[in-house]
Image (cartoon, rainbow, N blue to C red; front, side):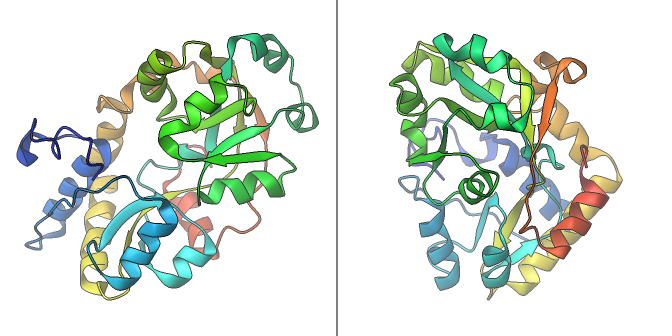
Length: 266
């Protein structure tokens, strides 16, 4: 948990704290049929690489959520149900106002490659973007929108489910950025709950719970209606979106199967 969150700052009690991934994990543990207690750990938003190290040590955390890679699936235990139902790989762009017209003129992936991209430290998407021919600048998550505003790079790609909610607070700190409503890049990239390799029973229980949440429709309902993810479903018109296709050549066979089974866009 980010130490700046309402829970960690003592503003909101845990039983009232609501982020999408927290609510989904609560739902999955409840549907698993197992007696599982979720215990939040407050910390200063460690990089994803640091979180991998914590999982390998099984200390101080044993569960995280982030984008997958072959390396992460080899080292850690994944629950192979994409928690945002495959919408993470549909990448829309935060862009400076002075670049919006140029971005709206993009018609191909070669056109899009003229723009540099910003990504977080250790994010698997950096490698995916580079392998698709893009120039990528890395930074800490909490500074990327400010780096975009300062012209350190041209575009900040964010997942379909998150971009509107993030922009709603980022624009107050970076007043020259906006969301391009008409163009997106797509590549297959699920986000999973990952677990310490010492937590096989926990992973199996959450996997079962997620499968049940998907089958009974509660997972999709939560995705479309949670305050964190609902704005994108309500405000982005997918019918008017020009989608540029990229690739993720390193997606594992298990992840391909997972996306084929659960992904909304695949």
